[in-house]
Image (cartoon, rainbow, N blue to C red):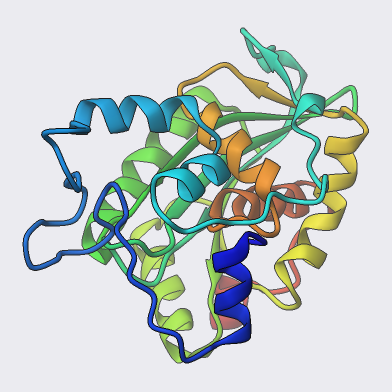
Length: 261
């Protein structure tokens, strides 16, 4: 972002920028979202392979013409340690926190669901993360089976928390999901303050080496997003992790079920 073109853009806000991302981030005249720019030179398989080997910041800068600033060390990813097996006898509490995106598809935010446990030794374990760009219907069809799968392997207490976005639309979306999850301990979390402030208590435990990950194919994107936080393009997994941590350590101040009763 601090190269000559980046500086020119900052100084000339009316400048017309022509951008050719290697993979389309939206439907264009001659290609659809996700299709390569010049498949004869760099095929889709090649680009996806390159993306899997790079950090988010490297990929966005080199291939997508959208440079981002790497985070300032809030989450030193070397502090996350990976466990091959979870000792379920040490679990004292469990929470699946959902950070729901407002829209589906395109290059927008993701919906993320993070399953985190508090342990009897004072540590925390992220067992599973699911993330995707889904429509409202697709999202609900994923959340309910996920709750069923979680509870099948987790003893109580197990909570589900839905982040409630500001405004009436956010409240209605949270209420709809809570109705769908009748029979579970499910709550709405009306978030306030910046994402950075909300993530601080969770970040402190990461920095202290008290947060562990269970090995899974979701880890690369999870660590990549944490490394670039708060300046990275996406923050959904950090938001959901911070929300799950807050639920496990201090509970919630807002509960749609309680207000409705």
